Amino acid sequence: MSNDIPFEVLTELEENFKYLHQHPETALKEFKTTAFIKDYLENKCKVELLDLGLDTGSLAIIRGDSNYGSVGFRADIDALPLEEQTTLDYKSKNEGCMHACGHDAHTAILLAFARLLSLDNPFKGNVIFLFQPAEEAEHGGQRVVDAGLFSKVKIDRFFALHVTPELNVGQIAISAGPFSANVDRFSYEIKGIGTHASTPYKGLNPIKALELLSNRLSSLVAQNIPCGDKALISLTHVSSGSTWNIIPDFAYAEGTVRSFSASARSTIIEKMTQLKTVLEAEGYKVEFNFIKGCPATNNDPKLSELIKEEATKLGLTVVSQRANLGGEDFSCFQEHVPGAMFNLGTGIGPSLHNGKFKVDPDALKIGLNVYNSILKRLSRV
Ligand SMILES: [Zn+2]
Ligand SMILES: [Zn+2]
Image 1 (cartoon, helix red, strand yellow):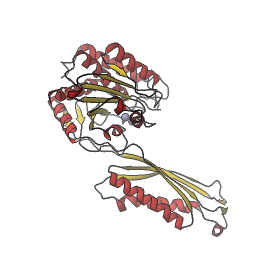
Image 2 (tube, helix red, strand yellow):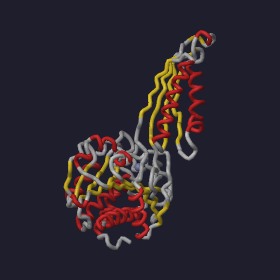
Image 3 (cartoon, protein in one colour):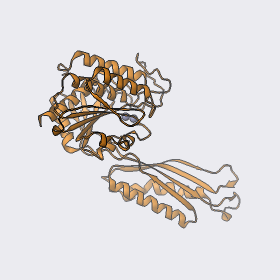
Image 4 (cartoon, helix red, strand yellow):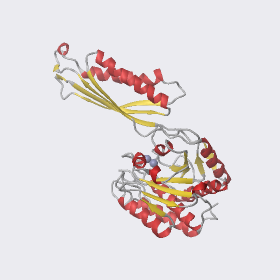
C-alpha cells in the first residue's frame, strides 16, 4: 500500500515518531518539540513557516493558487504528566511525562506529510500544516483560534486524525457528526449557618444542601434529556466541614457536564441554574458557576464520506466512529470551517492516557497514506 511513498520519508517518519516519543512535553511547555518540528520543516521540507502567534506550536504552508482552495491538516503535539510503564526501547526519557495519547504519532505523520508533499504535491491550492500545542490541557485549540489562525491563513477544509488502541492496524473509524462531547465544568458555593453540632436547629447545615444537590444532579439528565441525546453530569469534588462537633457554614461542590447537542447543553444549564433557586428557597446563599469548555466535535458529512471512500480504496477496513463523552479540541476549528477527524487503528492494547499505551509504528504510514489520498482526491475535484 505504501509503495508510492519514498523509502526515506517512511524511515524519517518512524525515526521522528521515536524521537518525539522519547522527548514528551506537557501542554504549553512543548518548547523542544516545537524546535524539533520547525527544524524538520525548515531543513527537510519545502514549506513556508508562518507565525502561529503562540510560544509553542507551529504553522506552515505550501503556497499554491488560492483559486484551487486551501486544505488544512492538524496535529496536536503535547504529552501527559504520566509515568511511562512500557518496555519500549524508545520509551520516554522525561520522568513523569509520556506521550500516552499518541500525539507523537500525529506529529510525526504530519511532518512526514509535509516532507512527502515537498517531493510530490498533487494539489494546486494551498496546503496548511498546523502543529497545535496544549490539546490535553490549557485550551490549545481555542488559543490557536484566538491568536488569529483564520486571519493568517484561509482554510476551506480541515482534517485531523487521532490514534486509537481500540482498532487494529489497517482499520480506521470515521462518522459524520459528533464523536466527542461538549466538555463543561460547574461549581456550587453554598453558604449556610454554622453552629454547635448539638444544636442544628440554630444553624443551616450546608452538608444537607450537598445531599440535595447530589440527589438532584444524579437524576437531572434522565428527567430532562431525551434518551437518544447522550449527556451526563458527574459530581466529582465536594468539601465541607472541619471536625466532628461543628456544623460548618460553607460547602463546595464541583464537577463536569458532558453533552453532544447544543439543546442538551442549554437544558442542563437551565436546570442546574434552577437548582440554585431550590437551594436558596431552603435559605442557603448560593453561587453557581458554569464554565463552557471545548465544544463537541462535528464531522462534516461530505468530508467524512470522502475519508471513508479513500480509506476503502486503500484497502483499509472502515468502521463507524464510536462516540464518547471525552473532549477533543479539534472542535474549536470545526466551529469555523468544515472539518473531519478520523481514528487511526494503532493496535489493540491498553487505553489512551494509560502508562502502558503503545502505538504500533506500522500504523504511521497508514495515517500518512490516508492524508495523501485525501489530498489527491481534492486535487481532482
Ligand atoms: Zn488525550
Ligand atoms: Zn489525544
